[in-house]
Image (cartoon, rainbow, N blue to C red; front, side):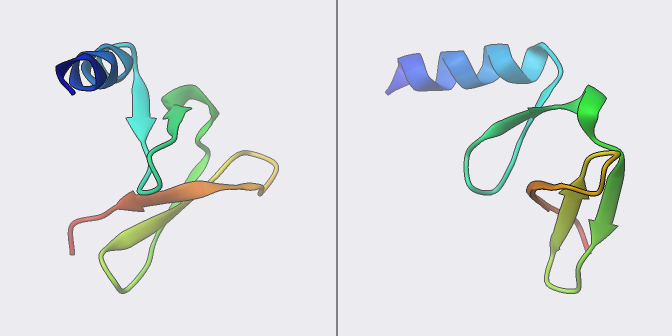
Length: 58
């Protein structure tokens, strides 16, 4: 289990952002962060494609 935490910390340190579903996305490809009303934010790239959801502070 500690190996998974180490891998996640390395990915975060290298500029990747973890989505709610557990996938990691590079911050460089994020173009839009659209806050939703339920504490999450929709993340899209510059082409308008859905990348995932982030936890968003209300």
